[in-house]
Image 1 (cartoon, rainbow, N blue to C red):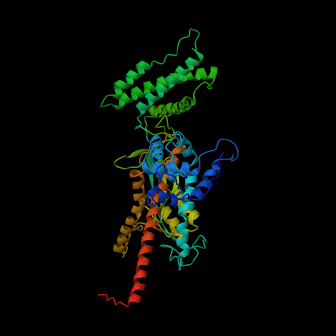
Image 2 (cartoon, one colour):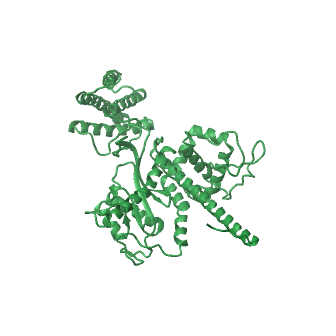
Length: 503
């Protein structure tokens, strides 16, 4: 059951402290609390609960969302987060408490449920409702309509697609990988882990139902021999490809023999006696054995939907081509930056080419879905500048960054200066990835579930947007006060009749 709370923001003077006094209104958590639109979060969060009248009452959206925000902001573990909240009155005020509580606000295991409820789709909806207002207001406050639609655009108010609204705004796009917290996968080590899991499953079956034979003997797995063979090769500094293939074949034969025993137990007793984690590992190992056998027989190192982690079988290798890490293992995300705010366009564990025509079209249409018109410019790197994408931009009246195809023209120097300027502007999206990976936790996702990984990535992007929003508010306030000081100065000068000479 979820009970809709009151939307009114609690005042710092109403927050009860054990030793009296009141909270500091300039504290970052107090300012942040008053800057987030909690009503939007409540309305989206309560969609997770169909039953709103009976059952145990769930914790409020302020506690769930606020706790996840603090965790990603400060890069805390689940247990450390709960301890920090129980010790800090400002954090308790941020998540909606009315008074300071010395005890734990909730159990650390509840954070898994919070991450499951606040998925990527919900975070996208929250971000669009909170951060797209500024773009709409800026476009509506302009006295003159936006000028032009980039190179190749028509001078009329409608482009070739018949859109009444002219193109406006700058879209900066890029893609990156959010690496998962897994050990670097090697075929030999994965085979050893898979073999040990089959032995654990066989031990469980034997404990429940006994032997498959009438003599009462346990199925032979030769686990000690297999383990010694693996360690003797894996501990060597230099391993030849021939020895690695020989040992992988032996380990796969052990896995196949163990799976045969497991199949006999399933046919005779079923799979109901296995634990949930054992049943999941068994299905993963069956697919893993088929993939490794295929690569071994065909002497190749790639296969479709290759499993690189038995505990997280949805993770795929993402080839990035970077000098530090040519291949990363985790989720691949495509983001777009508009007016300093970041939005996730695609989140996938499968590798994809972000410069493909269909992927590029999806990003452009996503911008149109958010703002109601196409961008005037798109700043992207070389992988996006294919002929198909250039043709699409020309059709929609969008200027795509980068030099034109063919030989340099008469204005080559001016084109080079313009390209360098656009490269500098495109650094904004690189900075977003850098801040998310260094300051936050996007550089190493510690989640163990598929849905919680998406929540962590989306929350990191939301933290970046809130920081940009806070900086924008500070700049606007400073500009407002400077303007007010100038107005007061002008009025005082007129009253006093002073003459100011400007040299």
